[in-house]
Length: 229
Image (cartoon, rainbow, N blue to C red; front, side, top):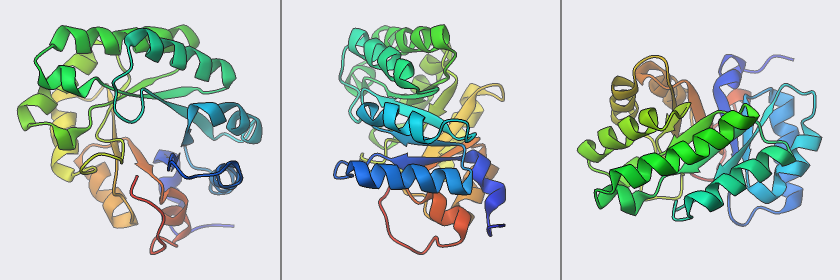
């Protein structure tokens, strides 16, 4: 069976992160991700093992969030969370930077925090997607955050958690792409609900799209409600 926007499926990380989601809903989300052949599910760390079992041999990756959603955990805790998630079956990691440290000018702390998770990811072959939570940052701070992600050997920079004061914008995606160049991934996440919005983000430079509406977009049911991420 073909779906209206199946060409987008391979770029979509289907978000299963809403705080009220039950295990039943998480399992249903994994089944939908498998049905529509999206790139990955992005799931809570405790549910990674369940998702990995449900998605085994499906071609859909399991991504786990680290330091989510505010980024305030210590680097040691983020590393442990990364390694435990990968042990449970995650093959991609989405970490949140220490936002307050960045805004306070503690750039080396942020770089070391990113590098600590990137090193843990490299040990198990998982890309580190660094969430900068752009809506909290000035344009200058967005540039600094992206440069620190590059210095910290991350695989991607990502706009948002979806739980901050705003989500992905075309401007931010284009700015992030300009800073990191062509070799690094850019993930747009937060508030993306339609195929047209996905195309706008891709045109601006995104190589992955994070959305709770991911499977609805692929299936053509994008008008349905279901969260902001």
